[in-house]
Figure (tube, rainbow, N blue to C red):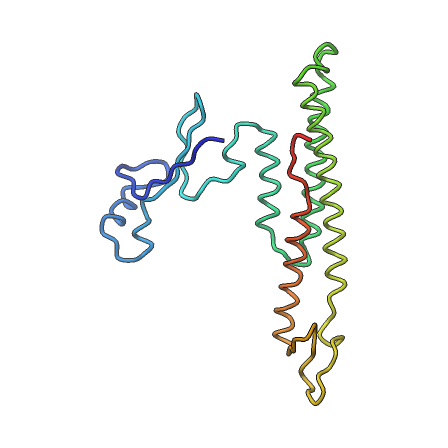
Length: 205
């Protein structure tokens, strides 16, 4: 991947920094003004300079369509809400990754027979298999999250604290309804993060 550079304050306007941004940065009235003219840039070999107001993500730092799409799938999962809807997002991405794998397989099959066993042909076949593996793992992760969510009790199912009508106990801690809902959301988020971490990122098999 290309090296990413950070410019604290642009001297001249570019695609992401305007003259107004530079004026704000030169005469800041707020903390936001100080960073108004900052930006990131990176450049591929034989390519033009790319600029962004935010740090570029992995999907932006490759010229490979395959890698860019794979990175983007995982970025969408990282950005997704870590709640009861996360399994659906995992399954959606799994289906998209299977489709990407089928594209790699089609490219391999469409190569001349003499080239299918070449380094490029073997790479395409390996990527197709990797997509299948990752998709399977994502679907398994979705099942794991759903199971974890179902294992988390509702407030009324918690053990009541003696002498307290609105307080329940869970793993040695006491909760009222609002604090339990917050704790439950935290447990679900932990389950989502753990499940995502179990998915392979070996994109080439």
